[in-house]
Amino acid sequence: MILTGIVMALLWGCIIAYAVLGGADFGGGVWSLLASGPTAARQQRLIEHAIGPVWEANSVWLIYLVVGLLTAFPLVAYTLAVALFVPFTLALLGIVLRGAAFAFETHITGSVNLRQAWGHTFSTASTITPFLLGAGAAAVASGQIHYRNGAVQADRFTPWLMPFALVMGAVALSLCATLAAVYLTVEASHQKDHEMAEVFRLRALIAGAVTAGFGLLGLLLAPGEAPIIWHGLGHQALPVVIITMLLGLGTAFALYLRRYLLARGLVIAMTAGLLSAWGLAQMPYIVPPDLTLSNSASSPAMLGAFLGSAIVGMAFLLPSLWFLFRVFKGNQPTPAVRGRDLEES
Image 1 (cartoon, rainbow, N blue to C red):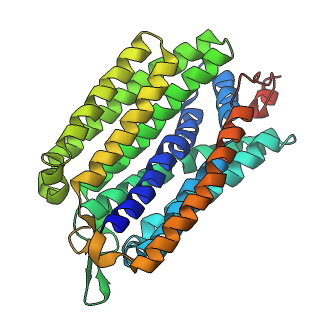
Image 2 (spheres, helix red, strand yellow; image 1 turned 30 degrees about the vertical axis):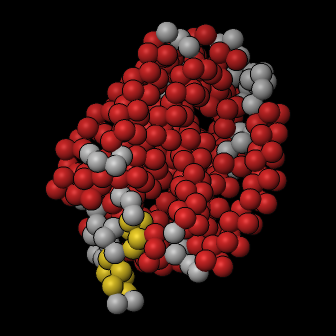
């Protein structure tokens, strides 16, 4: 059981890493879609500069999570693939489309209309994908997905289209927007662009408030639509819930004081706390109410082999990612002309 818990903690850590890194990339697409006013082109240029060097590397955490589930918890992977086939397929298409669209938008130097079309595709896919992932997670938490007698029993649409799931999808989307806005204040301050820092500071505060509002609505819906999560949040996960709320308030206060690096650290900790509270709340279930850590795990030999390979892999992966971010996320100057700026020149 200890080995199973360690492997599950590792995979949950991948979810957190994907949320705080890949989630910010999705949020960048949201702000690219909402860029407006006389500084719209500068907003989009800052987003492109922030995402460009690292967005593809952030997907490694999602890939690792999928492979880990297939290896360590195959029943869970099978159940989720069947029950959430529709939202996960749409989310996968969104991930592929946003990646392709971002590459084409930032490298096409010909037709302005074609660049704009790819830009809209990037922004739309970046908005829809985290919503679907959040709704899918809420569908799991709702307890409406069953694995009994060797078969998955779940409606194709109901679990991820319930009010609770839709609200959690909105929480995921607004959280991505909050992460991106906070990160962009740091990017702008590194570039000595105080105007852009102020723009995204305000947006971070608004997005954070929206996230808190949707989160409160989700809590109100949880007793009726996700009772296991509701019970867990009020018991074993309660200390983490309280700490997460304090971290959220701290993030807002740091933004108010324009302490952008502190705000970035706090919003990362808040996101990790939010997801940790979710995981603790539904323990020992992975897919409530039928699949638990003990009855869905692979053999101890398989778990041990997976954990060993994970340790070796992380020994290479983590330094590589650190070096990537060190090289490309330093104080690099923002290009004067990128993508859509050509339209205005």
